[in-house]
Image (cartoon, rainbow, N blue to C red; front, side):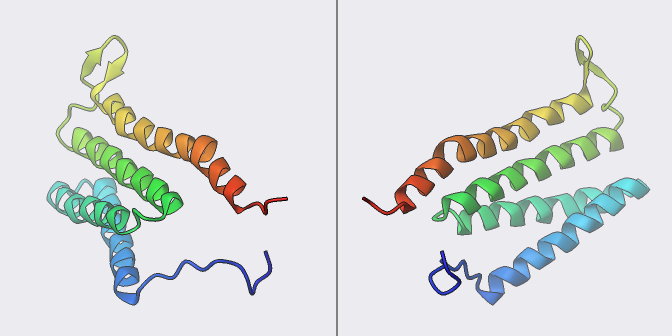
Length: 135
């Protein structure tokens, strides 16, 4: 595809501002986690996850964006759970065999990874095939 015929993905400025604030909240959450500022970390988890969900909803009509934004939302969910498990001391509590409270974060991490795996192994090849000229 040439630069002139390449499709464009344009983000309205108000959406872009929200995405930028999302990064700010995410950084404050992770800095709070690092510094063990429990109240601020938990407070920042809420808008970080909320905005990730809103971004996924707004991009739902573009499958590639939806897949990646859902993976990010699940990543933030896992990351926030992990942070909370450390803040409240159940990260090292044995849940089952060698799995601890912290390991339960694998569930949303793996859901996000599965979404991307499905996108890249099923949806993306379909999109690429649909873009090929018919001969």
